[in-house]
Amino acid sequence: MQPERITSIVIVGGGTAGWISAAILAKLLPSTACKITLIESSEIATVGVGEATIPPIIELLRYLEIDEQDFICKTEATFKLGILFKDWLTPGSNYFHPFGSVGVGINKVSFFHYWQIIRAQFPDTQFADFSPAAAMANAGKFIPPAMSGEDSLLRGANYALHFDANLVAKYLQTYSLAKGVERRQATINSVHQNDKGFIQQLTLHNGETIAGDLFLDCSGFTGLLIEKTLHAGYENWQKYLPCDSAVTVLSQKSEKTPPYTVATAKAAGWQWQIPLQHRMGNGYVYCSKDCEDSDAQHLLLNSLATPAISEARKLTFTTGYRKIMWKHNCIAVGLSAGFLEPLESTGIHLIMRAVKKLVELLPNKNCDPALADEFNRTMIAEYEAIRDFLVLHYVTTQRSDSPFWRRCSSMDIPESLARKIAIFLDQGKIAFNPHDLFMEQNWHAIFEGMNVRPNSVDWFADFTPESEALNIARQLQHLLHKIVGTLPSHDNFLTQVRGNNIRSTKLPQAS
Image 1: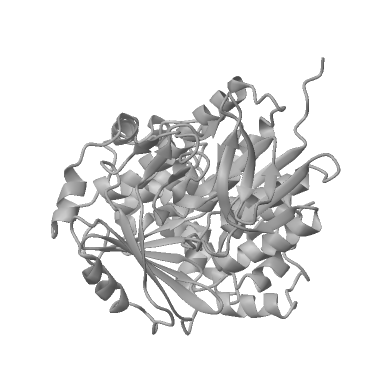
Image 2: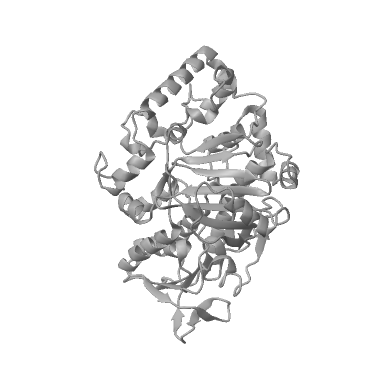
């Protein structure tokens, strides 16, 4: 007999995680086939630190068939070409982690390997300067790569968005409701399970009951369903990522809007700066062992680029992940599934990945344990891969000016990261992991920015004369400088977006 199909999905929690989940499921599942209900409470504040993203956010908009221009206008979004890291290697140092390609491959060998050979010929240039995204970012310029022409070097760039997370939740709420999602504003009083442990229904504060076949826990750090009800357990990663606190504050918009995030290392952690159209988002992520909360707030408020326009807000967290993210008929999404500090803006991506993986494995009412096992295996592997990339930023520091950084430079690291570093040090190669979010060029950008150099380069780079590689690098540098000089500033492009006056009429949309 054909197993019973799921006919009702209940999402617990709104915010970014809840409404991204609702939007994807509503796009996929006709309301006539599956009822989707989202329960959120106005009494529970959202964390709201996920205001910076990575390029897959654009894929999400196109999957949902959302007009990118409309989204940018209604969420106060700005464009993001990468992250500027200040003071991570040593105080006074900086490097850029760009989105997209860096340089061009020569004879099927990555540009990184030639850079190791010819870097002495470019004394005032960094590796990332050969990136089209970094070239635009450094000049404060922006256009989407797809608008740059078929043969333009800018086609190698990629971009993401900064946005107001609360406005994004409202935007996706409107989108989801229009596709048939039902919304309940309520708090949950009790959770009812059957004799197998499956969640059957929720009782709200007003006595109403909401039954469901499948439940998504988007309730944040508390994990109302996945932890408080199902006791999934938590894997603590603070031995690798020791920061456990953050203080956040909003400030006035800057005179010029940079098309990138800034992450500045501080004595006990790091500070972020995220530019939006209407304001600036700021936060200091720190280790409470090395910094009092009052000192963290004082440091943040006294290092803002623009005057504060909100009260400072304190957050505490434990880096790691839920040991079982899908248990019985409950799937944890977002902060209820795990937390990795926002150093590389991966929070919203992990929400998207969880929902897309659920869609791939969408179960019947019996929720076959094999599907849950596959979901858990895949998502844990993705969390681990991102963890390793984040740890790389800390363990490669040369700072010794505070107890926090001295511990970071000498801490034990995951075996998977140690293996990746060892392979890189031999010939500059990046070991492939099918669960890696960050690709070869991303790892190369961090290694190079943190002054970690391989002992030798790819054998095949030796087959290209140094003079040829040098000539290509000089041409690339010249062409990037020339092209970027013709582009509008980031602020001017945003003005064109808001005024619906973009040269090609509209930003590229899904085909």
